[in-house]
Figure (cartoon, helix red, strand yellow):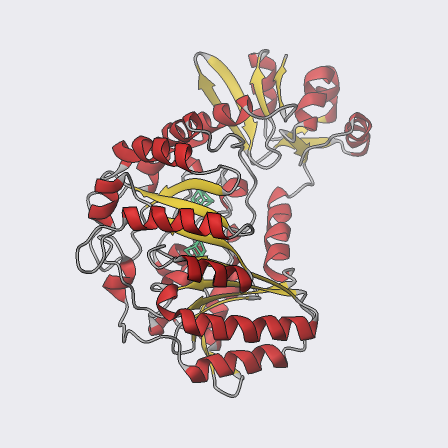
Length: 459
Ligand code: SF4
Ligand code: SF4
């Protein structure tokens, strides 16, 4: 809670007689100076009058009288959300925002795995390891079932977001065409907005395919590059072992030249195996692609199957957190992440919300894309007649998952929202976001960049 208006702060002082320090104060020392950040209000201050401020924020209960005795400091602490009225229950604010985001989506979000088959043999692919794959494209009965389901939706939604996914979705291009045309038609008849994007390895993005994707309303493509050519080719070869970097780069150029509307996201999976080569890749990408249309970003290489031992190359969340600001700085050197700021996160993803499903080629439904193809984790099934059968016990595990209660004691909760819910549901502990391990350094990166933001000094 940031109280912007000075009069409002004064009003708080009039109305309440008892106050307390916020649950979300994060105090730290850097270069012998004390800093205070509130993860809920995102106010960040350097503390000059250390003894008065620390005394106040270390009290369990702060009487109004004490605040009035230290008026200037108190007003600033109240303003920044570092001190709140005792009656305030900050966790309820977070709970409310989390609930709102779960049930307030006007869009139906579908991730459609067109096939579980892939032309690549990536060294770290979890689908290779976990999924039984018959290599087929999505079944006709599933396509028909989906069309009928969409036609039959009576509740008010404003639109449909589709992510074409796989395996490699472009192995099923013909079916993507058929499905897109029909779904766009349904959206038009219902007055829904239609948005579509695709996650592809980029190998089959020919000029013809690119033009078709454009016509089919796909406005964003995500591909993965894991390093400069030699590194990428070692990690993401074709099944035959042949490299793929050169073809992907050529295809991206074709796509960008042959369409005007499609934007591109290049994801770099980072682990110990490729981290030292990221800079070479960024050097290449920044001089070859227009940053207005091609965004480049990174994430940790994911280890999702607890039954398979984690590769020594993968970073733990903690170790990845330690690399986080170093990576941001490297990206910035090449013109990416220029506007990096620390943002509030009240819901990590759509998986625990109402209007989001992933569908596999057999019509099984999941709440998270990680589970696609793992039918034990399926939460339902779409039938050929358009009816959806929900496996309520499994479905409700997701819908009723309460990350806010699980993480209620954590000071990082407003920036993390309880980690990845798949891990929370399938492992023993939530998987903490890297901001937990990189907050201090991230704050300084963020503030350099935050004009007229929440920062200031507190005397
Ligand atoms: S549950 Fe985890 S892996 Fe699944 S979509 Fe959410 S954040 Fe991603
Ligand atoms: S997942 Fe970890 S960092 Fe995130 S809120 Fe929960 S305990 Fe905190």
